[in-house]
Length: 196
Image (cartoon, rainbow, N blue to C red):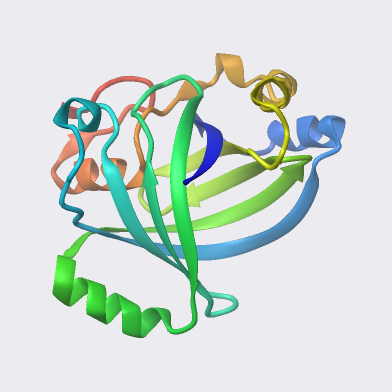
């Protein structure tokens, strides 16, 4: 599977990040609206790994273009930067595939967000406004031929310039946060979930 080095944090707003993105010389690629439909996945791997690395399968639909992507990934729930292993496939008819997967697997949760996509070399910087959850920043440093050390150095450089070492980290997926909210839990980004 392909590999990213990822980090996610809660933001009060994005205004303080824009000057830092300019300092980084990051390039704004697009602003898009995404609907991520997560489906139930039956774990088939070692249970000790799954305790910290829940497998996830989601269908991503992009409202502006109508395109879709089927994405499977495994990522540990950690506050610090962590590796994500993933596979993805472009989908030509996402609505038909959603109907099929809903019948076969059932929908676990749906996450809607507006995403600003910024790029710095091999690092994707996402500024996400997630419905019912608020504002988040997410880094994805993609492994594309560079060494692991080079990827880690670039990832840390972005974190340093954006001052993310002092941010409120988020260990879990947006899907987990939405599910917790629907179940009546508060979702403080840097801490565990607790009943409201």
